[in-house]
Length: 108
Image (tube, rainbow, N blue to C red; front, top):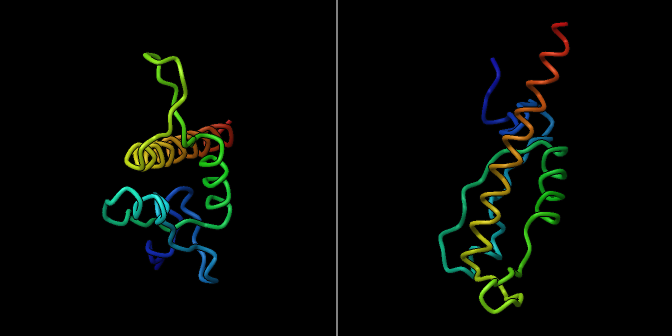
């Protein structure tokens, strides 16, 4: 029987070789600075972990454009925490859609 605790929360990969490890949805440094409780952790395989952190580097910025002043401003730590959570949810949806397409192509 497969212990779902050892499965990747994104792709479902299962490993008994410690290839699936817990990771914080929002980096601890961000939650500490934002003054919010530590974020939830999810189990990720090494591939999803690497890919998710690549998404974070591409999609989470520490500045935002303010249309009123027509200038960039530093984001608050709370905004950063929300961005990380949003990017994780987008990543998980993207990976789900990818798996769905692969399953459909195998049926043909």
